[in-house]
Image (tube, rainbow, N blue to C red; front, side):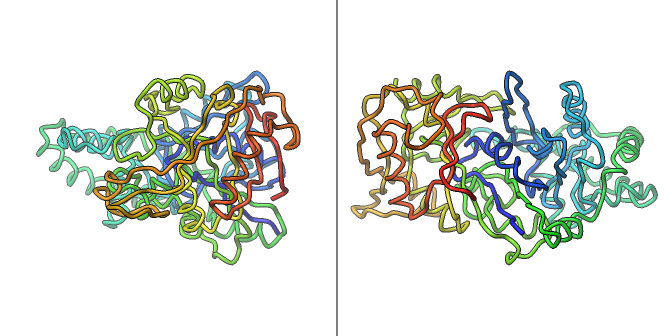
Length: 427
């Protein structure tokens, strides 16, 4: 058997969609194990571009099983909008290709409303959520008042739970001077979703276990990035789920001994969306150059991403926490033509240099990056298809990533398309 994890090694937006799509060629099953439609993956195949938010990236293949795990929060409205979008582009999304966990939590209209109201009430202390209801849905899950997919499949159970929740949420919405929700409207809308979703619903823990035992290749796909993890990210500027490799076990219902390897996707530089400390951020012409060359704007929000030099302290921390067996480094092509390139190899904190990511945002805000400088490369790498063909200075840059993190590089991305990829080492 071969089962491996693909996750973001930075703050998200590392190119996970493209890499998952590329690696899925040899996978039989692709499993999304956490997050919701607040994430966005862009995949380019030939002259077509696909923007995915909730559905696993393996959906673009005709012969793959795609699974939305119980660790994912599912907005049925967003789900079916995405399915219709893919169908319009010629991608079939059938029950044979897409399975949804019966244990996944449902995002309800009150989650989206409360997300927006609470974010507005925070004022200058806002977290920068996408206001898609992700956090409030995970809150209800932890509070044990959430509604799951299996509840939606039972009309009477769904009616009882929804009625109680609408009453409770309307009281909270009223405190924020929001407009109360109507039970009947939500109830009828979601019953429509139930009938369309029913054929896709299954116990995905059993399904994935059986696939692994049958020696199928299973790829577990993460959303967001490791530094947005609820425990190990830059809290509170994080998402509400576990984005590290450990989240696979609870988010997909399989044991750790069934995972063979974990691949961390990392850009050749660093980006971040939203608030929070960013030690290597470039708030100058170089930062803007990288933003423009790398087209650094969010798939889901359209927001401009903050850009900075590659931070190896982050990658070393991610490799440790998720037990990464290799990195896939993307967007090497963006750095072409830059005369001098820097990488961060430590943080200076209170006259001491550390090589790990501190928990306290106050400490992180005080960290000064310690840089190493590399000569850049003028050559375009978009047409390169083997490691040996890369410019020598690009090879030195990549070698330093391996040396510092103690983790090999298995895949290199030299452009946005599926074929803009160099496989250095078989996974």
